[in-house]
Image 1 (cartoon, rainbow, N blue to C red):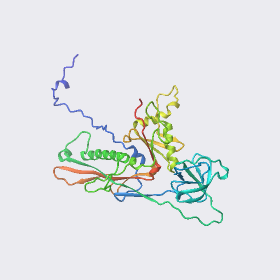
Image 2: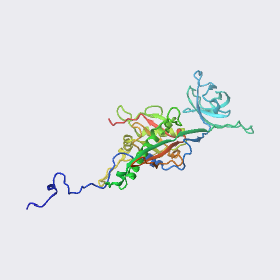
Image 3: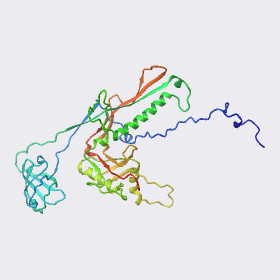
Image 4: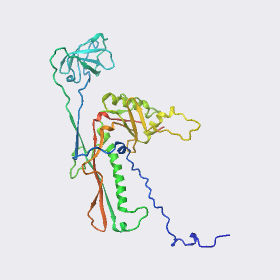
Amino acid sequence: MPFSGKATYTAGATLPEIAEDVSDIITLVSPFETPLLDHLGDPQREASSTVHEWLEDALLPNSDAVDDGSLSNPTTLTTFTVENGDRFRVGDQIRLRGKGEIMLVTGVSGDDLTVTRQYGGTSAVSVVDDDPIDILGNAALEGDDAPAARFAARSRKQNYTQIFTSSIEVSGSQLAASTIGVADEMDWQKQERLRELLRDLENCVINGIAPAATQQGSATVRRTMNGIIPLIDTNIYQVGSGPIPAGGGTGEDLLTEDVLNAALRAVWGGSSGRIDTIVCNGFQKRRINSFIASSQRFSMRDTAFKQMVDVYESDFGVCRVVLSRWAPADTILLLDSSRIAVMPLGGRAFHFKPLAATGDAENGQVIGEYTLEFRNENAHAILNGLGTSAS
């Protein structure tokens, strides 16, 4: 029997007496996560000036290189020039890296070394320009006077604070009106602007750069901080160049485990830092996940397929893999998180600052001032030139 009573479709085109059915939930699709900031955690201290500085020290170097383009009789010569003669002392045992002969330094004059060849009966090798030299250690004479004191000068590094801010204005009528899904429009706007600023902070921590001049800022120059990528100067590796082998794929240097391990080994060879964080974007994260593909095994009872690497463990460190949208597509960052801090200027962590009303509206701004402390840049590395497509 057909329904003969009044139905929603008989109420007219505008349905004047039917209440609107609107879900009381507001969904957000814009990316706002900050995985690197979450991984680093809150800093243990605050910055106390808009120019934030820290000190770094280093041990006396125990390596150098031959700097002599006019070498003759390379297997018998006993005098040659090095890049930094002040790194050597009489009594040092030295060896050309990758070669078996040990030499004993018997004289140092400026950058010229005089050596005893084939020390201890080792076999002679050729001395070639640009050969790396390892200083094995110094042997003092029994009863000899104390050697001249040597030391490495500490260096002062710095970065700058950057102000992140966003304004909020909500009319009196909007505050008074009932709204769907939002109990307090001002609080909602604070939350949204804070998400945006945290997103921007992580992006600047990775990619930001200070101005070329007037870096402390002025009435016309905005003060910006240097991010991780501009601050790394020593360990910048290109796939297929130097210690890094070519990558995988046809015609494109796709990330492989050999490439990643070569970069980790190169950092380990030059510093005492322990890489514990790998920061990459989506494509490179999938490449890291593929490291385990060939060794995965599944049983008939398995109902889920998993191919995800959250932690990568190698001979050179246990690394947390951090997926960040803001890492460049062809780049992986290798970081020692114990030497990194994202810190606010004292009393200037993100907060809401009410502003004077100039009319029928509530005004304010979310504001914070932060800097990046990035200690010992040679304890970190950038690996770039990676392929960005699977074709």
